[in-house]
Image (tube, rainbow, N blue to C red; front, side, top):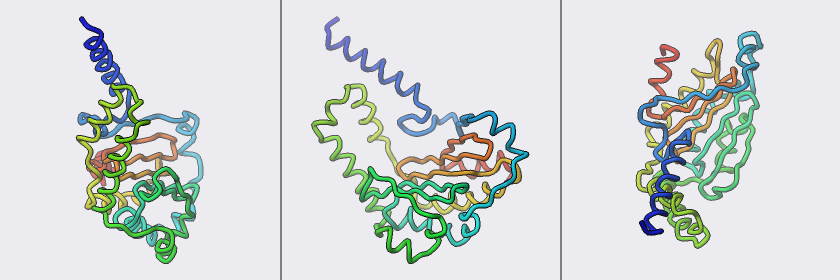
Length: 227
């Protein structure tokens, strides 16, 4: 057996191990899983039902804010959105500056004039095209090509199967935030939506984290809330 063949087998083994170790795989959540739950601080779980509910500045303006969040993801430069209900902060990442995260006060984002100033408009289809161009440029980099071969294979496969979050799914996802926030016991503390992945990340007051496929979010709500 020559060394080239041995290296190929080693790379294949490493690639398989990396994918098995990942909570979220190349294509997202495993097709057998509706969602993945990650437990957090047990002391928070044990006291969650006796702690007073905190109503934040985002709760006060969410009816106005929801439409603007939809606008950010569909019509503007934002591709990743974090809503911190307890902290009152909203973090965004722009396709025009993809390595930098910005933080905004939730009540300010309820103001459409603020959104117009802070977030350049871009058609959803153009945003997806720019993502593909950025990944193409990255793969052409000489530094990128210093990665181990098994990681190059992983990235190539990821690129081949990648599909962005469908635009028509976004309003339905955002409409669940208020429902999850107003649950009587284990309610939403923060949530992240990224159009690069068909995935919604949610943390609750019991410190648990749920990773749910965006397309299955309604099913998740039905199975867990009966709504």
